[in-house]
Image (cartoon, rainbow, N blue to C red; front, side):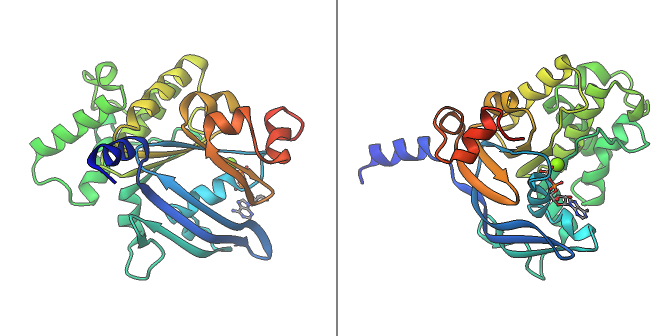
Length: 265
Ligand SMILES: Nc1ncnc2c1ncn2[C@@H]1O[C@H](COP(=O)(O)OP(=O)(O)O)[C@@H](O)[C@H]1O
Ligand SMILES: [Mg+2]
Protein backbone atom coordinates (compact mmCIF):
# COMPACT_ATOMS: atom_id res chain seq x y z
CA UNK A 1 0.00 0.00 0.00
CA UNK A 2 1.45 3.41 -0.89
CA UNK A 3 1.76 6.31 1.56
CA UNK A 4 -1.25 8.15 0.24
CA UNK A 5 -3.50 5.13 0.64
CA UNK A 6 -2.17 4.55 4.14
CA UNK A 7 -2.90 8.13 5.11
CA UNK A 8 -6.39 7.93 3.74
CA UNK A 9 -6.98 4.76 5.63
CA UNK A 10 -5.79 6.14 8.95
CA UNK A 11 -7.94 9.23 8.47
CA UNK A 12 -10.99 7.08 7.91
CA UNK A 13 -10.68 4.32 10.44
CA UNK A 14 -10.10 4.77 14.13
CA UNK A 15 -8.16 2.28 16.20
CA UNK A 16 -9.93 -0.24 18.35
CA UNK A 17 -9.85 0.95 21.97
CA UNK A 18 -11.89 -1.72 23.72
CA UNK A 19 -12.46 -5.19 22.38
CA UNK A 20 -15.00 -7.54 23.95
CA UNK A 21 -15.26 -11.17 22.99
CA UNK A 22 -17.69 -13.83 24.09
CA UNK A 23 -18.88 -11.77 27.03
CA UNK A 24 -21.53 -13.36 29.23
CA UNK A 25 -22.98 -11.77 32.33
CA UNK A 26 -25.03 -13.56 34.98
CA UNK A 27 -26.92 -12.20 37.97
CA UNK A 28 -27.15 -15.39 40.00
CA UNK A 29 -28.92 -17.79 37.63
CA UNK A 30 -30.20 -15.09 35.35
CA UNK A 31 -28.32 -14.71 32.07
CA UNK A 32 -28.28 -10.95 31.36
CA UNK A 33 -25.65 -10.67 28.58
CA UNK A 34 -25.33 -13.43 26.00
CA UNK A 35 -22.12 -13.90 24.08
CA UNK A 36 -21.43 -10.30 23.13
CA UNK A 37 -18.57 -9.53 20.74
CA UNK A 38 -17.82 -5.92 19.93
CA UNK A 39 -14.93 -3.60 19.11
CA UNK A 40 -15.30 -0.06 20.46
CA UNK A 41 -13.32 2.52 18.50
CA UNK A 42 -11.11 5.29 19.77
CA UNK A 43 -12.09 8.95 19.18
CA UNK A 44 -15.62 7.84 18.41
CA UNK A 45 -18.98 8.09 20.16
CA UNK A 46 -20.65 4.70 20.37
CA UNK A 47 -24.32 4.56 21.37
CA UNK A 48 -25.90 1.54 23.09
CA UNK A 49 -29.62 1.41 22.38
CA UNK A 50 -32.40 -1.10 22.97
CA UNK A 51 -35.53 -1.69 25.04
CA UNK A 52 -35.43 -1.26 28.81
CA UNK A 53 -33.93 -4.29 30.54
CA UNK A 54 -32.05 -5.55 27.46
CA UNK A 55 -28.67 -5.26 29.20
CA UNK A 56 -27.24 -1.91 28.06
CA UNK A 57 -26.18 -0.78 31.55
CA UNK A 58 -24.97 -4.25 32.48
CA UNK A 59 -22.71 -4.43 29.45
CA UNK A 60 -21.51 -0.84 29.91
CA UNK A 61 -20.51 -1.69 33.51
CA UNK A 62 -18.39 -4.60 32.23
CA UNK A 63 -16.15 -2.09 30.47
CA UNK A 64 -14.73 -0.60 33.67
CA UNK A 65 -15.46 -3.50 36.00
CA UNK A 66 -18.25 -1.70 37.82
CA UNK A 67 -20.07 -5.05 37.95
CA UNK A 68 -17.36 -6.21 40.38
CA UNK A 69 -19.22 -4.14 42.98
CA UNK A 70 -22.42 -6.23 42.55
CA UNK A 71 -22.12 -9.41 44.61
CA UNK A 72 -24.32 -11.75 42.57
CA UNK A 73 -22.92 -10.56 39.24
CA UNK A 74 -20.53 -12.80 37.28
CA UNK A 75 -18.75 -11.72 34.09
CA UNK A 76 -17.23 -14.21 31.64
CA UNK A 77 -15.31 -13.76 28.39
CA UNK A 78 -12.54 -11.39 27.51
CA UNK A 79 -12.44 -7.59 27.42
CA UNK A 80 -9.29 -5.73 26.45
CA UNK A 81 -8.27 -2.08 26.66
CA UNK A 82 -5.50 -1.31 24.16
CA UNK A 83 -5.04 -5.07 23.84
CA UNK A 84 -4.66 -5.73 27.58
CA UNK A 85 -7.12 -7.92 29.47
CA UNK A 86 -8.91 -5.66 31.99
CA UNK A 87 -10.05 -8.69 34.03
CA UNK A 88 -6.47 -9.88 34.53
CA UNK A 89 -5.55 -10.44 38.20
CA UNK A 90 -2.80 -7.85 37.89
CA UNK A 91 -5.26 -5.10 37.01
CA UNK A 92 -6.40 -2.88 39.88
CA UNK A 93 -10.04 -1.97 39.18
CA UNK A 94 -9.63 1.41 40.87
CA UNK A 95 -6.75 2.30 38.54
CA UNK A 96 -8.73 0.94 35.61
CA UNK A 97 -11.64 3.27 36.44
CA UNK A 98 -9.29 6.25 36.24
CA UNK A 99 -8.62 5.21 32.62
CA UNK A 100 -12.22 4.26 31.90
CA UNK A 101 -14.33 6.91 33.60
CA UNK A 102 -18.07 6.84 34.15
CA UNK A 103 -20.94 9.31 34.26
CA UNK A 104 -24.24 8.09 35.67
CA UNK A 105 -27.89 8.68 34.89
CA UNK A 106 -28.57 10.82 37.93
CA UNK A 107 -25.99 13.56 38.54
CA UNK A 108 -24.19 12.42 41.70
CA UNK A 109 -21.73 15.07 42.86
CA UNK A 110 -19.98 14.29 46.14
CA UNK A 111 -21.17 16.37 49.11
CA UNK A 112 -18.08 18.53 48.73
CA UNK A 113 -17.17 21.80 47.07
CA UNK A 114 -17.16 22.20 43.30
CA UNK A 115 -13.37 22.35 43.45
CA UNK A 116 -13.04 19.22 45.57
CA UNK A 117 -15.40 17.22 43.36
CA UNK A 118 -13.02 17.72 40.43
CA UNK A 119 -9.80 17.52 42.47
CA UNK A 120 -10.77 14.22 44.11
CA UNK A 121 -9.68 11.80 41.35
CA UNK A 122 -6.31 13.39 40.51
CA UNK A 123 -5.58 13.51 44.27
CA UNK A 124 -6.38 9.89 45.11
CA UNK A 125 -4.55 8.66 42.03
CA UNK A 126 -1.49 10.72 42.93
CA UNK A 127 -1.54 12.50 39.59
CA UNK A 128 -0.54 15.95 40.88
CA UNK A 129 2.46 17.13 42.88
CA UNK A 130 1.44 20.62 43.97
CA UNK A 131 -1.55 22.81 44.71
CA UNK A 132 -0.76 24.84 41.56
CA UNK A 133 -0.84 21.75 39.43
CA UNK A 134 -4.13 20.68 41.02
CA UNK A 135 -5.61 24.16 40.38
CA UNK A 136 -4.65 23.77 36.74
CA UNK A 137 -6.23 20.33 36.41
CA UNK A 138 -9.43 21.57 38.05
CA UNK A 139 -9.67 24.57 35.74
CA UNK A 140 -8.87 22.55 32.63
CA UNK A 141 -11.44 19.87 33.50
CA UNK A 142 -14.17 22.42 34.24
CA UNK A 143 -13.39 24.16 30.94
CA UNK A 144 -13.58 20.86 29.08
CA UNK A 145 -16.97 20.24 30.68
CA UNK A 146 -18.08 23.72 29.55
CA UNK A 147 -18.76 24.71 33.16
CA UNK A 148 -15.79 26.95 34.09
CA UNK A 149 -17.36 30.31 33.27
CA UNK A 150 -20.44 29.49 35.33
CA UNK A 151 -18.58 28.38 38.47
CA UNK A 152 -15.15 30.04 38.49
CA UNK A 153 -16.22 32.59 41.12
CA UNK A 154 -17.68 30.00 43.50
CA UNK A 155 -15.36 27.02 43.43
CA UNK A 156 -15.73 26.53 47.17
CA UNK A 157 -19.53 26.36 47.03
CA UNK A 158 -21.09 22.89 47.35
CA UNK A 159 -21.44 20.93 44.09
CA UNK A 160 -24.88 19.82 45.16
CA UNK A 161 -26.08 23.45 45.02
CA UNK A 162 -25.77 23.62 41.24
CA UNK A 163 -28.67 23.09 38.81
CA UNK A 164 -29.22 19.56 37.45
CA UNK A 165 -27.53 20.33 34.15
CA UNK A 166 -24.59 21.98 35.91
CA UNK A 167 -24.28 19.03 38.30
CA UNK A 168 -24.08 16.63 35.35
CA UNK A 169 -21.38 18.77 33.73
CA UNK A 170 -19.59 18.79 37.10
CA UNK A 171 -19.71 14.98 37.07
CA UNK A 172 -18.27 15.04 33.55
CA UNK A 173 -15.50 17.39 34.74
CA UNK A 174 -14.84 15.01 37.63
CA UNK A 175 -14.63 12.08 35.21
CA UNK A 176 -12.28 13.82 32.76
CA UNK A 177 -10.04 15.17 35.56
CA UNK A 178 -8.11 11.91 35.79
CA UNK A 179 -7.40 12.09 32.02
CA UNK A 180 -9.29 8.92 31.17
CA UNK A 181 -9.04 7.35 27.74
CA UNK A 182 -12.61 6.13 27.65
CA UNK A 183 -15.73 7.78 29.04
CA UNK A 184 -18.78 5.64 29.78
CA UNK A 185 -22.09 7.49 30.10
CA UNK A 186 -25.26 5.74 31.24
CA UNK A 187 -28.25 7.81 30.09
CA UNK A 188 -26.45 11.01 31.12
CA UNK A 189 -29.27 13.30 29.99
CA UNK A 190 -32.33 11.50 31.26
CA UNK A 191 -32.62 13.76 34.33
CA UNK A 192 -31.93 16.95 32.36
CA UNK A 193 -34.14 19.53 30.65
CA UNK A 194 -33.82 20.08 26.87
CA UNK A 195 -31.39 23.00 27.18
CA UNK A 196 -29.05 21.14 29.53
CA UNK A 197 -29.38 18.06 27.30
CA UNK A 198 -28.29 20.07 24.27
CA UNK A 199 -25.28 21.39 26.22
CA UNK A 200 -24.24 17.90 27.28
CA UNK A 201 -24.70 16.57 23.74
CA UNK A 202 -22.50 19.34 22.37
CA UNK A 203 -19.93 18.49 24.98
CA UNK A 204 -19.98 14.80 24.04
CA UNK A 205 -19.18 15.76 20.47
CA UNK A 206 -16.14 17.75 21.69
CA UNK A 207 -14.98 15.00 24.04
CA UNK A 208 -14.79 12.64 21.08
CA UNK A 209 -11.69 14.47 19.87
CA UNK A 210 -9.80 13.16 22.88
CA UNK A 211 -11.66 10.12 24.15
CA UNK A 212 -13.56 7.09 23.17
CA UNK A 213 -17.10 7.77 24.43
CA UNK A 214 -19.75 5.10 25.02
CA UNK A 215 -23.24 6.38 25.76
CA UNK A 216 -26.31 4.43 26.76
CA UNK A 217 -29.43 6.22 25.67
CA UNK A 218 -33.12 5.39 25.43
CA UNK A 219 -33.52 8.25 22.96
CA UNK A 220 -32.97 7.20 19.37
CA UNK A 221 -32.89 10.86 18.36
CA UNK A 222 -30.02 11.36 20.77
CA UNK A 223 -28.16 8.32 19.46
CA UNK A 224 -28.59 9.63 15.91
CA UNK A 225 -27.39 13.11 16.92
CA UNK A 226 -24.31 12.26 18.98
CA UNK A 227 -22.94 8.91 17.87
CA UNK A 228 -21.00 7.61 14.91
CA UNK A 229 -21.51 3.97 15.85
CA UNK A 230 -24.57 2.29 17.30
CA UNK A 231 -25.03 -1.06 19.00
CA UNK A 232 -28.58 -2.40 19.32
CA UNK A 233 -29.20 -4.77 22.23
CA UNK A 234 -32.25 -6.98 22.64
CA UNK A 235 -32.87 -9.51 25.45
CA UNK A 236 -29.18 -9.64 26.36
CA UNK A 237 -27.99 -10.11 22.78
CA UNK A 238 -26.06 -7.60 20.73
CA UNK A 239 -28.26 -7.84 17.66
CA UNK A 240 -26.58 -5.34 15.41
CA UNK A 241 -23.60 -3.00 15.49
CA UNK A 242 -22.45 -0.60 12.84
CA UNK A 243 -22.35 2.95 11.58
CA UNK A 244 -25.12 4.98 13.16
CA UNK A 245 -26.46 6.24 9.83
CA UNK A 246 -26.70 2.73 8.48
CA UNK A 247 -28.36 1.31 11.62
CA UNK A 248 -31.06 3.98 11.50
CA UNK A 249 -31.70 4.05 7.77
CA UNK A 250 -30.95 0.52 6.66
CA UNK A 251 -30.88 -1.91 9.60
CA UNK A 252 -29.85 -5.45 8.76
CA UNK A 253 -31.93 -7.26 11.37
CA UNK A 254 -35.73 -7.21 11.62
CA UNK A 255 -35.49 -6.74 15.42
CA UNK A 256 -33.50 -3.55 14.95
CA UNK A 257 -36.00 -2.30 12.42
CA UNK A 258 -38.93 -3.06 14.74
CA UNK A 259 -37.25 -1.14 17.53
CA UNK A 260 -36.30 1.94 15.58
CA UNK A 261 -39.71 2.14 13.97
CA UNK A 262 -41.32 1.88 17.40
CA UNK A 263 -42.79 -1.61 17.17
CA UNK A 264 -40.79 -3.00 20.12
CA UNK A 265 -39.53 -1.26 23.21
N1 LIG B 1 -28.04 -5.52 40.24
C1 LIG B 1 -28.81 -6.42 39.57
N2 LIG B 1 -29.20 -7.55 40.15
C2 LIG B 1 -29.99 -8.46 39.49
N3 LIG B 1 -30.42 -8.30 38.23
C3 LIG B 1 -30.05 -7.18 37.60
C4 LIG B 1 -29.25 -6.17 38.23
N4 LIG B 1 -29.05 -5.16 37.33
C5 LIG B 1 -29.71 -5.52 36.22
N5 LIG B 1 -30.30 -6.72 36.37
C6 LIG B 1 -31.11 -7.43 35.34
O1 LIG B 1 -30.33 -7.58 34.17
C7 LIG B 1 -31.10 -7.31 33.01
C8 LIG B 1 -30.48 -6.17 32.23
O2 LIG B 1 -30.63 -4.97 33.00
P1 LIG B 1 -29.94 -3.60 32.60
O3 LIG B 1 -28.55 -3.86 32.21
O4 LIG B 1 -30.19 -2.65 33.71
O5 LIG B 1 -30.78 -3.18 31.29
P2 LIG B 1 -30.93 -1.77 30.55
O6 LIG B 1 -29.83 -0.86 31.02
O7 LIG B 1 -30.84 -2.10 29.10
O8 LIG B 1 -32.28 -1.25 30.90
C9 LIG B 1 -32.53 -7.04 33.49
O9 LIG B 1 -33.24 -8.23 33.43
C10 LIG B 1 -32.32 -6.60 34.93
O10 LIG B 1 -33.44 -6.90 35.70
MG1 LIG C 1 -29.90 0.98 32.04
